[in-house]
Structure formats: C-alpha cells, structure tokens
Image (tube, rainbow, N blue to C red; front, side, top):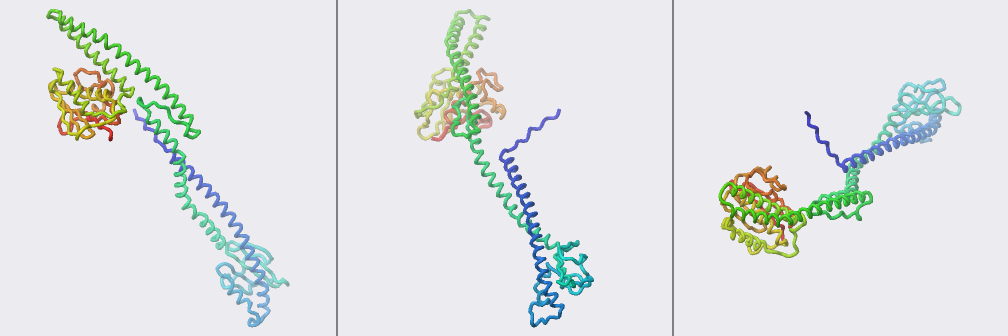
Length: 450
C-alpha cells in the first residue's frame, strides 16, 4: 500500500508576493504595449509631417538648381541642402514628367522608386515616400524615409519603457513583502497567544486590539477556552474530591488489614491478608498522587515569597533519614555558594523533590544510594540502574507511563514534577546514563534565573 505524501505547506506571504508582483508586472507590460502602440502612432505622424515638410522645402531648390541658378549668389543651393540632409534617414530623387531620374541624393538608389508620380504619401517594401511636384507639373520629387528607422525609434521607445521593469520587480517584491508582513503581524500575534494556551493558562485572548477580521476568530477561541476551562476545573475538582475522600476509608481498611494480620495464625490466610495490605498501600499512594496531580494542575508551583530551596531539600532528606526503610540511602552534595533562593511555593517544591527522590529509590537498585547534587541553578537527583533509551526517557513524563520496571508505582510522579517545575519557570530534564557515569538515571531541575 502506497503511503500518501503529506500535503505541501504553502505560505500566505509568498503567495501574496507572487500574485501581487505578477499582477503589477502584467499591468506594466500591458501599459508598455499600449504605450508603444501610441508612441509608434505619434512617431509615424511626426515622421510623415517631417517628410512632407522636407519635400515641400526641397522642391523650390530643385527647380532653381535645375534652372542653373548661380550657387555663389544663393547659398541655399541643392548641394548645400543635400549636405544638410541626414543621409541616414532621408533620401530623395528628382524625376521629370516621363519618370526619368534627373537627380538623387547620395544614399538614394539609382533607379526610380516604384511609386506613382502623384502628390502624396506612398509606400514600398522598405520606404515611406512623399511625392511633391513643381507648379508646372514638369518635375517630381520623391523624399523617402526607411521603415527600419521608424521601427528602430519605436523599439528604443519600448525598451526605454521596459527598463524600469527591472527595478520595478525587486522593488515590488520588497514593498509587498513589507506591507504584507505588517498586515499579517496581528495574525502572528494571535497565533503566538493561542500557542501559549495549555492546561495552566486558560486566560481569554485579548481581542479588542485585533483587526475587525480577526475578532471572530478570537471570540471563537475564547469560547473554546471557556469550555475547556470548565471541563478541566470539573476534572480537577472530581480528582481532588475523590482522592481526598478515599484517603480516610483506605487508611481505615489498611489499619484493619494490618490488625487482622497480627491476629491471624500463621498460614495461607496471613499471606492473602499481606497481599491485601500491599494492594491497599498502593491504592493509598495512588490517591495521594491523584491529589498532588490535582494541585499541580491548579498551579501550586508559583509563589509570591522567596524560599531557600536548599533548606527544603535538607528537610525532605531528614524525613527519609528518620524512616528505617530509607535511612542513610540519600546523600546530599551541596556545591552551591550560600542559599538557593527562588520564588516558589514550598509545598509545591517539596512535592517535586519527594517524587524525584521516591522515583530514584523505587526504580534504582535495592539498597543503593541516591544522590541529590545541588549546583548554581541546577538540582540533580541521581540513581543507579540500566541505561534507558531516548524513547523510554520521552515516555516517562507521560501520565501513568511506567516503562520497563516491575517496581510498584502509579506512573504519575514525573508528570507531576514536570508540571510544577514548569509553573516555577524551570525545566525538568531526564538523562540516562547519568552525568559522569556509564549507566544510571538522572533527573535534572534547571531553575529559572533570578
């Protein structure tokens, strides 16, 4: 079965830049085409006028020259006029009434132009010709202008109009990119605000400053956030109430079971009652974790007053030292200079450290030591054990995810710790092997800067 390719993502900015730039270029080309047409028409009229005026001015000189006028007495002889003509553009021929060629300019052909001997404009394959006659009709003058000269003038006009297009295209791209970027900035701001929303931040979006087109989106998101907030609050309330209400009956059932074990004679009933005691103990821990999870979701981590985290850690380690099952198993290595002060909730941070230490005690080798190492802004909890893969490390922060272990637990400790650490403004990293070791596990709390 062929795997479908993921659809290619498109950028609104790129599409707008391409569409608007293409539209501007298209309209510019249309304008250039119209301009070239108009310029060509106007140039043709101008050339025709110049052609006719030249013929009319040249005809009297031709008549006088042929009548053997004295060139010294009259400087405007045919020879002088010929010198004044631009040989590259205009040529002429003088013919009699029978069509015999009498005179011609230097660049004119030696055979008569194939046009009638009649006053007016005529065209050949290469020339635009104006014919003028003498008053008595005995002489005819053809003044010719090559079409290639007119085409060259029209081409140069078109090129002059196209040159600005080279600067228009990059200029349009930059201008459109700048304008579109500024126009889409409210969308980016709205997207960024939506991206910050999670279980710990359900505050409504600020929609009053958004453009009119984006306000319905913001209102819809706010309605969705309101429904999610209500659902999460109901879930937290149910979890907290359930865990709180279950603690008392679970503790009572556990006490009765322990008393029953003490009163029963040795035998299979004691073993069965012991399994019941273990199940009730696990249920009690699960209820406690659910209560911690509810408090973590309610935002217990943030605090208004500064607290010394080293003092909190020492107190927690002291509690474990007073327990006969864990006495002496936790080592404290304090490499921080002085106190470690942060604005945290003392109970919230205590929950984090208890969960991390408990996780290290349960999942590390039996009777092995757990190290709590404190450095400037970093708290590490290290324990022994086999190396975990990156996939396993990524899954350990998920709720009720326990990985490859036979030890008891609920799979909530690390998820609760990560949520509270995030509320403090820090980060919880899980590493395996531990720093400076070939195996083991490390839970690292990176605290926010003061």
